Amino acid sequence: MSDFSLPHASNDLTGRVALVTGASSGLGARFARVLAAAGAKVALAARRTDKLEALAAEIRAAGGEALAVTMDASDAESMFAAVAAAEAAFGTVDILINNAGMPDAQRAHKMSVAFVDQVLGVNLRGPWLLSCEVARRLIAAEKPGRIVNISSVAHYRYDGGGAALYAVTKTAVARMTEALSVEWAGYHINVNAIAPGMFVSEMTDGMFERIGDPRGHLARGRVCEPEQLDTTLLYLVSPASEVVTGAVIRVDDAQSARKRM
Image 1 (cartoon, rainbow, N blue to C red):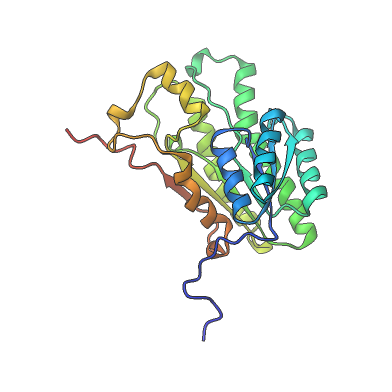
Image 2: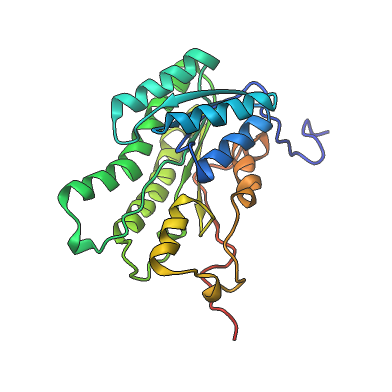
């Protein structure tokens, strides 16, 4: 007889400790709410402390446990301090959601060196350093863990709309996911990624202001809501995905498909 339940699926994260970056709004805020609702203790990390405190209060009012941690995704010491603060409050972080990121919204040849460094720093260097810091602590504690990186469908397709560097960083995040999954396989640290299409967020709100509403050009005529990522997120951090590592899961509602006439 198998020791596994039928079906072998559970979203219970009781006893787990999660750190979510970019948690002050959009997908990050939703991720934090979902993990807390599933039982995890959640450290909320971003620069906008007022929004983090409001979200933490909301989670606590709903019966969860949450901590607001000020963090700058371009500052290494700030990121290391965020991990340390989460561990001091709740114990070893065993779920990391690398969600913090920024768009470029500029043509490649018009970007300043400082801006290039900023985008690379937030979108790639930040997730790399945070992943390594969390993994280092998990290895020392001899605990398994889950790291979920947020890539993008821009990893698969770029149409020349002025976000080339963003696309490059998201491809790098996908490859980082694959490489680190191998690096830490023996420590039972699973590293996976989600590659979302357009989801309603502050980032897409700004994009729509610049380029117009895209719904008329999409195969299903809609832009996804953050809630529609819940099941993918929970799968990658729950016991059901214990043997899944190095995966990049595309979640884009067929937005790359041509709209039928």
